[in-house]
Length: 233
Image 1 (cartoon, rainbow, N blue to C red):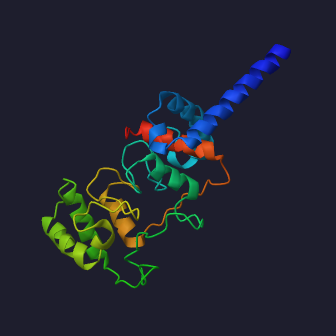
Image 2 (image 1 turned 30 degrees about the vertical axis):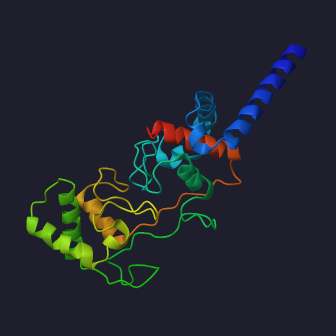
Image 3 (image 1 turned 45 degrees about the vertical axis):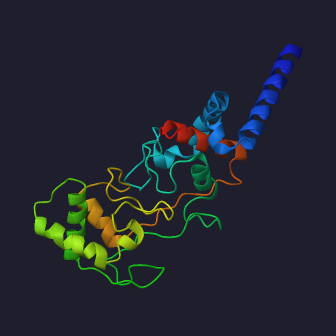
């Protein structure tokens, strides 16, 4: 009995030591330390299964029906996949109500009378929305049956202010969470119908804030784990 208590005490002390190390080490450096990476995995895997799999899936590959992104494909809405970027999102969320959450932009619903809650922009006709979807499909090498629609969509891309968030080259802006429209990672599905639906009705997905709900060491561990799994190291 005494031996078991000693073993448990030693293990608890080792865990506290590693928790201190994972928090005191610079995040990007921690992701290069094999011992801390292993420890991060031991904390992150059960936390992800309990708190994140419901949206992002048990395999972490996301769920387009809910707009939950793939967490390990190397494509990032916010930042460039650095540990600190991921930790910021986990800690404070996206449109979560946390005063430090990521909430600088969202996708307007262009078929609505007032498409955007942040400032006034013009609505689009359903035919114009279809043209924009055709242009996006064409950019991704999926040529639409009506190339004229894609040409009209390209002109609309500028006049409808799409470039304001997604940039003139449609490469997206990770500072505000505007995704690239030239990559094959789609939050809500990549078909013409799904793309048109997003343009028509908009999206403003929410990721909860985990600060105060998960221990700081666990949040850091998840960020390191996802950074490494995504191949960013």
